[in-house]
Image (cartoon, rainbow, N blue to C red; front, side, top):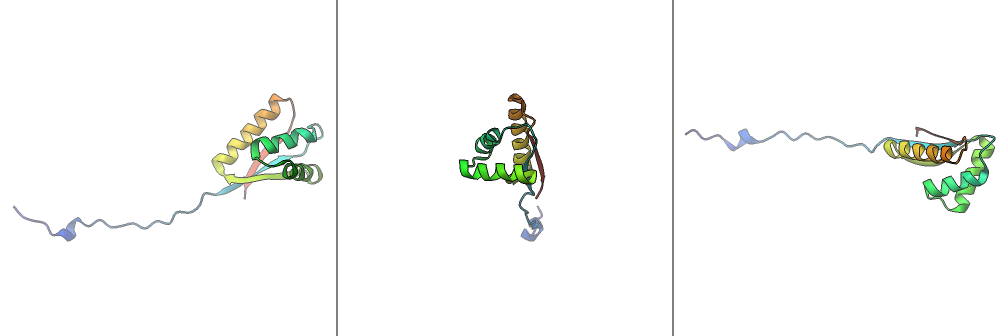
Length: 102
């Protein structure tokens, strides 16, 4: 039987650099119908903000037309958008929640 040299069994090692996942901002958009208190509840419930932080974001939404709730990887951001949208619909509010690339 012929024997093979050990060097014939060496695999080429491929070096790949992993990049962190792309991040997306989750935003609430202002409307003329959703109560401010409801927006604060949403921010506390879905984004774990304390009352003071939630009030600041709610005021940003009210004054500037939109406010950043948080920055997340794409799948988490999409889940948050769906959860907030479903919660708003369930409570009959037109609150819009969207995501955009950071």
